[in-house]
Image (cartoon, rainbow, N blue to C red; front, top):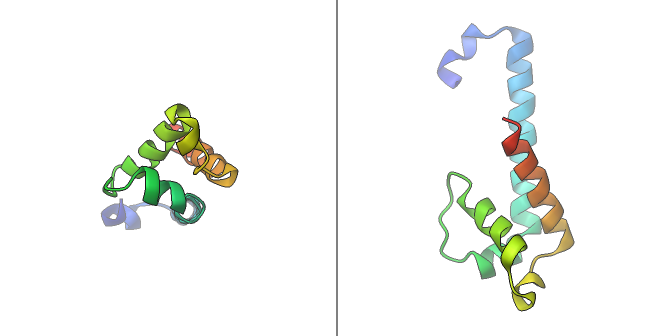
Length: 89
């Protein structure tokens, strides 16, 4: 995408930048609000290709009560927002 940046109109470039900033902001929020869940429930999962998001999402769906307590409501909301954004691509 970056190699073709000059081929897009200014409006398209601005929209791409806006969407990238939104995505970056959501991921920063995810890592901040889900830190405990990531460090505890997804320890050892490597970054990349949404693996950590997938791990936390799976824990939200299937974690036993003792693990579910580690996933804060703000973390759950952020995971939902990121999944929704990823599925709309």
